[in-house]
Length: 125
Image 1: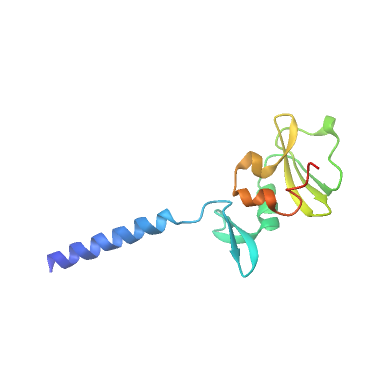
Image 2: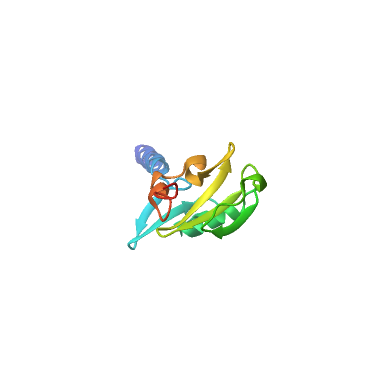
């Protein structure tokens, strides 16, 4: 019986370790029901890419500029301000970081798939 308890304990421990190796990371992108979604660690749920960005922005310390096709006036922006840039491809969350606008993913380093989503792949063209 003692051996059986040891086997159960070790198999449970192994299962726990294996699951933690494959746990979702904040900003990880996956395809669920033919929709790209991103894991949000705070809500512990998959969100649409846009919802993930807007959730991040709502918790940010920076000013959130109005969604637009034109970038905010350079002289008025500050470090960590956010802005949802719009072009014909869609939207892309931008973050003002080290004196210039960057894709938020280039600052935050979520899943690389964010840089291909919506307007992000063409926002600097």
